[in-house]
Length: 481
Image (cartoon, rainbow, N blue to C red):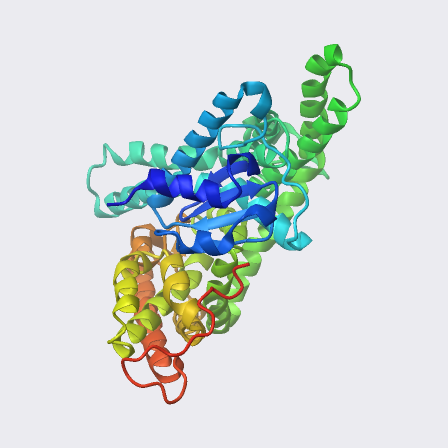
């Protein structure tokens, strides 16, 4: 039986103890920790823990422990509970502000051995990751509502479903502003207040650069920029105003200056960038769809391995705001399908390796639902070649979906988060959901088949006997540090 309390206790002990942990959060599959002293983390012992599928960012302050869906929620909650209990035991003054969870204020992450670009992308991803559950839930509700509308069923219910599905997206800029200020060290509610300007109907009366603004112009990109500016202004004020004036003037100056800058600059600029993203995505698929699908489907697994795939969330969200769906997610989802095919080939080829086959059997259901980490860290990366051949399968599936985009049949997802089979309820396109589902299903089958065939043909060293595990000098996932 799974013991999440024991897992949380062990993770804390192997990351240098509670005193070494400054920030705790999680995404769909990973426990994300910010540690004070990266050298205190016992990476090898952490990898060896039962239930731990991989470790990313070892040696840096930003540590990610891959646990898988469902498990990560309960383990994270237990880690936060133990940290809070430790803070109470040591006294509020001793630990106040030392630990940041999703409920607390931001603590600076300190110097990192990540490159500047990777560190920046990681922090931007941290803004959007907490929003994924709402995006998924609202996307599925929207999909159900769309199916009912197309079928002409329950006409009295569909308007209510549309309101439920659209409410979050209508105010997503506010949530992005709140999360951005929290992540970058500002007061979250001030970030949300400034970002709320973007969606307020009154902006239609404001003229900037000779044109009237539109509510929502700039979307999540404008909200992110507005919150970052508000955070900078707030920090500048806090360091210069005495306490008595700080309480009154800092929030006033922050909201006023950042709000005016948002209206008379950021909304216009972010709107132009958002339009360019939409235009560029449409051009890419219409003109070079098959090639673009090959590249995107083939390179997505390495992004997942490095934890950089979350940086695409703002692009997905921008496309959903503009077009109602993101055309990139179905292409990227093919990477996971290629890995499923590769894992099946390993299962067939190494039929006497009972340990590896047991790992594949346990990880395959998650892989079919688009959660790739169990197969990445448990199967393909340790073996080496199957990771490459899985990417080949993903490229083939992406090319399949991209080819139909060149023919005018676009496939999109109304929300982000799931992939694999779990993406079917969220699929739509410029020709409706039925063609999108058929094309996406064909892409999955292509990726499965090519990933299987490529792994069977090229995924093992020449001369490897059937049923024998290839010699692997290092079972630690490459590139995870």
